[in-house]
Image 1: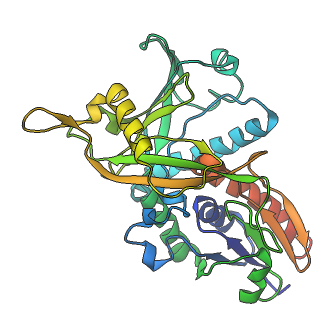
Image 2: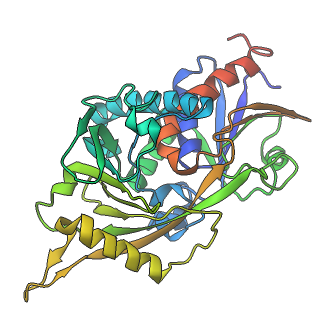
Image 3: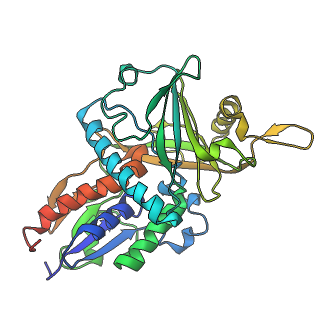
Length: 363
């Protein structure tokens, strides 16, 4: 290795950018960070509308924090990471309003709650301000708490600008087919942090435990004074469907969702999904509809969003691999929890990075 470590992050989605920020903020020795990715806010062709690229999941995300009770040790470990992100977002909301992070009331209604919800299981209310049970919806179990929402495209650009200007992180626009290709761009056996979503492997291919979860949502232009601008509300229906509204701060509209289609990799728009969302939206969120001059109700759809959440069978993978010339630290497989896990998982990567660097550099 050189006299100072060179760290290469593969992937410029929410995990890649957040990991770069966590490492930049905490690593005390001199270092270089380069992010290599095909898609991201560094790609000038994407800046006009990043949501035109469904394979780049982060910009289309509704992006809110909806806690849930932990059913196993992996979920409990991930819960702790979401609370680290929550703490950071509280800071950002106050110090950096341009981040677009906003704290609002979170409400959820469960038509067929499992035992973990019924007993407010471990990991559900932990660290959540103003968490309480509500009883205003017959046939549903309800909860409310304070939570955050964010305008995801704005937040990605906020992170990008912060990394460039404050921490001098470099970006390379390239599509890698293996992690080993990092060595074609960066000499000196850099430490590789793998934030590639579906788990790009060192010698090519992707983690076989990863799979897509297709999401289709509608971005709605709400009527003036809509109450959902200060609430995010989620219904979990007994038939397995989810219906939710998530405001995007800074005049970003309101997300009406959504679908969670496991294993589905279709990136086009399905009209039947749109129709189903509109039907449920009309039933559960009528205040989101505008009214024509002849008193007809309608949803003012700004855009239909489609993206593939990069999930993994056993959850988020944060592990260290020793691969030929490089050490690889993984951080991928967040599924629909990318924003919730983002800064917390970045801190965990930082801890593993210090383990790796302590063998060569004085930390």
